[in-house]
Image (cartoon, rainbow, N blue to C red; front, top):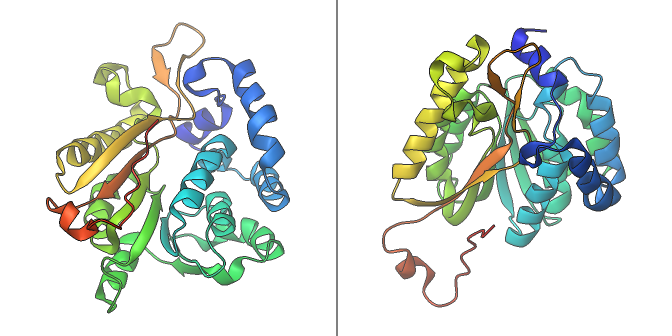
Length: 274
């Protein structure tokens, strides 16, 4: 495992609470009691995987499920699947006739979660595409009827391509749809002096900063930037403060300047307010 993997695997997941005890209280009181059996089993199976730090946390998953059940999407995209915790959660949260286009360059990790997806009886909702995400998204755009037809997308993949994914996904997501990006604070390093950023965090930090700047200036969308998951914590031994992975999402709903014309009086626009 590389330096980033070792670092991420060993950090706690208390989030901005800065208290593992309070984090555990939230999990035991509000998250774990509602976590369905297949999700729990997949989460536990993922813990033994060498890249387990990449998995969606159950706390973040609960928010994702809440959003999905509120929006009630019929057609979704997931870029970056890993073992499939967020994918299974999505499949369980969308309507029975809902469909997910799941894209990942590595199908091996997905094999860890697929038995649990089958057990839950939702594998029929998933179209898994083993591919580079840029190629897959370009392919979707070339298919007639896909542009502007997706209700929801979740991106947790290679950070340097987030900007490229954005330009493609904004064409695929319908007006009033929602796109969630994961890791947009990159362990808190976006607000740190570059000299204090660990070397293994720098490339993704630059990519995430570019994405945040792009989203902030994109007049086609509304955004909410949410800190959720890991937070900053100083390493032991007098090292510089190092950001723990921050799971926070920019929820964005893309719209045109004349969005009212699209909505008229009957279209429901969902804008998260936290």
